[in-house]
Image 1 (cartoon, rainbow, N blue to C red):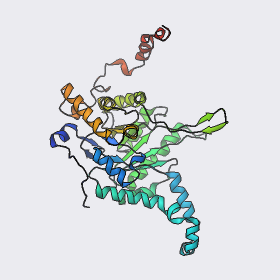
Image 2: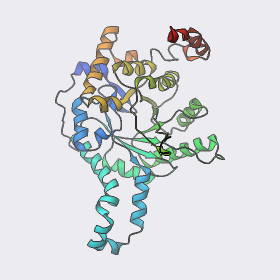
Image 3: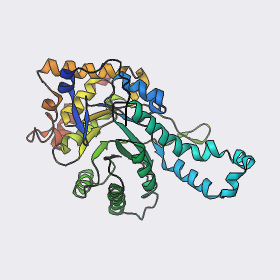
Length: 351
C-alpha cells in the first residue's frame, strides 16, 4: 500500500538513531506516542499529530457498548426493512447503526494510507468477548497494532480475583489466535498481585505489550442536587508515581514491551518513565492542554536531557533507575515507606 508522507520536518538520521526505540516489534523514531484521545478522532487530527512529531498514534477507543448497541439494532431489522427508504430514514440507519463501526474502519484505512507513523487501533471493552470478531476487521483495515483498554468493575462479589484474571487471559489468548498484529493491554493496577498477573500474561504469551495504567473515571456525588455526577479531569504529573514504580520493578522481567501512560506533563516525566524502563511513553492530557505542537517540546526536552547527561541514545539510559539495574536500592522496598514518613516535616505546615 502506497503511503503519502505528511511530515513537514523529517527527523534527521542522527536524531532517529539517538531517540529511536522499539515497541512490540514496531520501530519508532522516538519513544513518545500520542495515546487515544479526541485529537485523533478524524484524519485531520491524526495528520496534525504526525506533523507535530508523534512517533505513533493510538486512535480513540471504540467502546464495546457502541459495538453491542449497533449489533442489537441491526439484528432487529430485516433485509426487507433495509429496502425501505422511509424505514431506513426513521431508524437513522446510516448514522446511528452502521456509522460507528464502518467509520472506525474507514478512519484506520485513511490514516494508514496517509501516515508514515504506525497507527494503533483501540478497543475499550467490559466483557470477555465483546469485540473478538471486530478485531479481525481492524487488522484487515491496516492497523499496525491493537490496544485493548479493559475497564470493568466486578459487580458480582462472588467472583474471585482468580476467575477475573483467568477470563481476561483466556480472552487475550483467543485474540492472539485470531489476529497477527501485536496486541497491547491497557490495564489498571488494581489486581491483588499485579506482578503475578503480568507473569501470567507473559507465560501465556497473551500480549505483546502492557500499557500502565488505565485511568478510571469514577462517579462523584452532588450533595446539593442529590445526583450522581461525572467529570473528566486530565491527568497531572503527580499521578506518574504508581506506573513509575511498577515499570521500574518489571523492567527486564518479561518478554513484552512496557508502555507508560498517565501524568506526562513535560519532558521530565518522559525521562523518568524511560529511566524506569519504559519502551514508549504515551501522552494525552499534555496534548489536550497545549495542542499537538507540544509533542515537539516533549521530544526536544528528551533530546536535551540526553545531551546534558552524556547519553548517546535512549537505549543507553533506559532502565537506569529500574530495580534490575539497582537491585540494592531500598527505594523500591517497604522500608523506604517508613523512612519517607519519618523524613517528612509535618510541622512545616503550621509555622
